[in-house]
Length: 202
Image: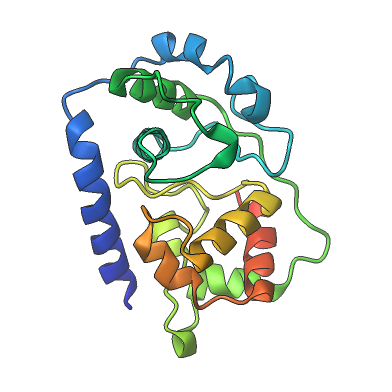
């Protein structure tokens, strides 16, 4: 599958989910007080200190909002967050997303012996496996494409990335069929190599 086709399909999927929030405007000042409970796992400013919990600081508002909606509405299952968002309105979630998007992310630590395979997959994909380059959607520096809803990956914790890619591979996230098709072609070593490279990307 070409990178252009992947981006087109992802854009279409995200557009349908974001349409309901199109008329809403995020207000970070209102969203910040709503993140008190979130801070326990994701840190006060969205820079989590526990590697299994994702860093949210600097993540794109559109992507974060869609994930919060999916978790609240049970399209994405995150056991640690079960019921946490049940009482939040669409506006609340957009305000939270806006606040986290405005925070400065902390650079991830480089792993001493990150395999070359991770860099090769991220920037070049694997033609033999039919894998597009991760950078096609997530940008060469890992900053993502906020307006298109493609998430920031650079600096994200490697353990979280390994879990997320493994979940994608197993089809555990019904809201991300495109990532399932991609991750299904990755073995454990590929996933570990990608996670190590992406954590150090900035």
